[in-house]
Length: 287
Ligand code: ADP
Ligand code: MG
Image 1: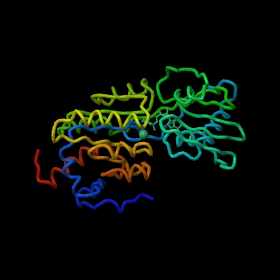
Image 2 (image 1 turned 90 degrees about the vertical axis):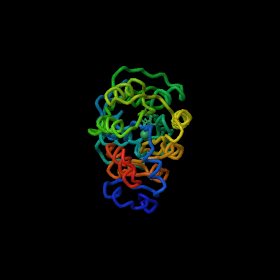
Image 3 (image 1 turned 120 degrees about the vertical axis):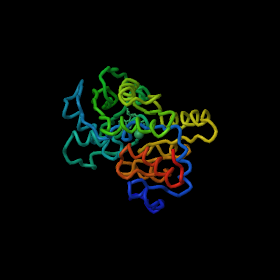
Image 4 (image 1 turned 60 degrees about the vertical axis):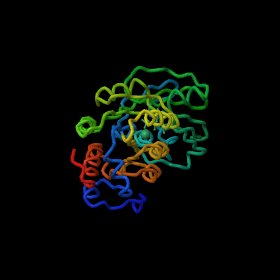
């Protein structure tokens, strides 16, 4: 249920799949000099393949089942990937007490056993020692009944257009591109290097992303605007805080779409530079 009624149909823009909430946002878009991206689901595919399962006390299939069940209620791209890899229908009656912790993971009771699925931060908070691993990709650490149970490696793929999207932003006069992510430094660094963004910050909690955007806003030159592009539930506060919030519409959460000023209907990052160009054209600015 995308609340599309919030968005004005700005002729040319909406034909390009760029929905702008009101014509007052065109000027901000036209003057965007800094673009800040969320990584997962924005610059990367969002639903990705499970590339490896490292198990300790329990068998591989069972570990993936615990993960898929614990994550069965979450719209997070990692959860979708785990459900996809599990591949079987999920009986929600086996799952209770689900708690999703933004930037960390989920806890739930599966088949009567407490299960945690998430990153090192989550495991540390639960007091569960876990194996730090050097493999590329996002890692979902698992704990069952308070014991470490192994980890699942998922490879998040860069969107085919993401690199060109970053290049085009530079071509339309954006001075600085920044990638923010809650993912591990190792995974973030690889993506940032491949995309050629100017700056990246990893291992951020949702509140850290807001603080980082505030820092970046404080050092913008007068008249220069900052855009944040994201898709997730946790991105709503950052989308509101930026001068202009751009949400991915097809994969994005309703909360992100509601908080955004601009929605990209087809989740194509190339449309960010396009939106800036359309805004300038609408305002009669030729640059
Ligand atoms: P991003 O900043 O790249 O969009 P998030 O802030 O959504 O990512 O999540 C940051 C990190 O928190 C993920 O890389 C993952 O380690 C962990 N995480 C968040 N949600 C989940 C979940 N539902 N299941 C497992 N891990 C999660
Ligand atoms: Mg995200």
